[in-house]
Structures are given as structure tokens and as C-alpha cells.
Amino acid sequence: MAAGAENMSNTPVVLNGHRWGRGLASLTMVDHLNPIQYNGFGILVRMPVEVALEHGITREMQDQWALGSQQKYQLAKKAGKFAMKSCP
Image (cartoon, rainbow, N blue to C red):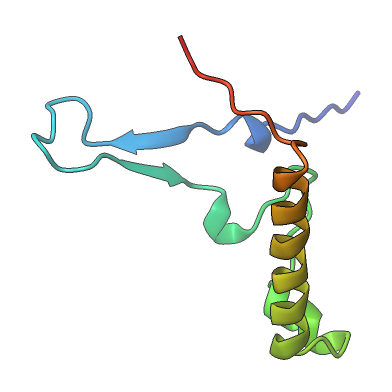
């Protein structure tokens, strides 16, 4: 019998500097799976730039899409689609 198990998706995010405190300095969180581009299914994900080049997506096209996305958000916000809720 042979068996295997995937456990990489359970790898913790590391919080550096919390044990002895950092004073006013910010704590640094490190995801050790991010540098290898692990997507949770055991597949390494290609860099977005590589995919964009492969499909002929230019920076200008990305900027236009981002602008359109922000404009749609502002319209939805003005229409009351997003309600602000305060935390207790």
C-alpha cells in the first residue's frame, strides 16, 4: 500500500519579531509559500507578466480596465450598493 498527503496549504504565515516585541516598529508577516507561487493545488502559477505577454495584453489595456473598474465602483458606491458598518 502507498499513501500520500498534501500539507503545504497548512503552512503558517510567520509573524516575525513578536516574541520579544518591536517597540514602535511594525511586525513583518511572511508567507513562505508565496515566493514559490504555490496556488494551493500543488501547481506553480506563472507570473502575471508572462501570461499577459502570452495573450497580448498591454499595460495600457490593464490601466484602462483598472480605470473602468474604479469608475464602476464609484457609481455603485453612489447608488448605495456598499453600506458602511461600524465595528463594535
